[in-house]
Image (cartoon, rainbow, N blue to C red; front, side, top):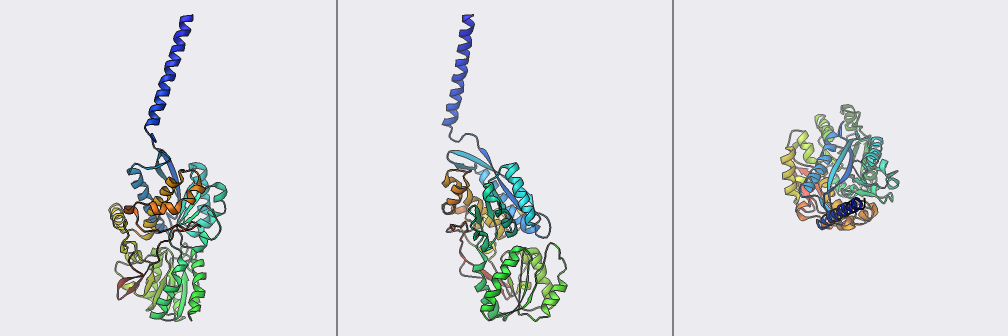
Length: 393
């Protein structure tokens, strides 16, 4: 009996020694097996803004693939591979909020991407309580003016464009403008910001209505009404594809003036919708297409995107790609993938630490409110050619 107990004791001791040895071996290997880190995305993947939503998701997906193929990212000695969980919100803020709650509850995410201001505002109601970071793709200044401590604004704020866009269109075409922006919250806010700037420069708003791209597909009636007021300039914008169709309707009805285009719509994407070339876009002032930019990582990203999707990427794709590198670099600095406040506090340094070859855009700083602060640039179309103002960097 004693012999049996002795051998039982020896066996247990041997098993414990093996277990301790295994633990020591795992400790010696550094981070060991990579853990899964899930990020959420809610955006318009169907409906009239689907093209826009797909662009944002494509850029984010490419960043996930590149990071994972490079071995993941390491935080405090632990390696992580990223999983992207995406849901369609049809460009509807209430759907964004529902998707975010689902992503947080089911996938346990602490980061949710949204590419429209309505969805971002909807999540701001509860994201601090639920402890997740909103990675928001909107140029809406108000997105970072609410005091939300877990909110990031990825593109440059649009109010920086109001004065130079206004002066260009007035000097070239005249001071009467017709407002025809998208009916989204972003479009309403853009219009509210533009009105005082246009009027302060001596301009007149001769028509003021919006277009609901989720409902309207024929723009002839509203465009005819706008053109009956004899505007020199049309203020249009929203997702690139429907915005291009609005512009074409104006041209088809004989409008020969200029177009002040909201930054969500991209001139290269609009040109592609209209068959290529910039002839129909004569007189447009807008933001600079990504393919016409020359930042350290732009060429590499454009080539990779073209190879994967057989088309040029837009700014939405480029900024989403860059933003994930900023986020993971911030996590490295913070030493955590879980503490959202430490991650937010490390975003500025994270932007500075992005490898040069991944700098699709250069972001010199991230504001205390969470806004990316790249340099201001604008593009305009004259004589069928695209021109860039304020340098090429």
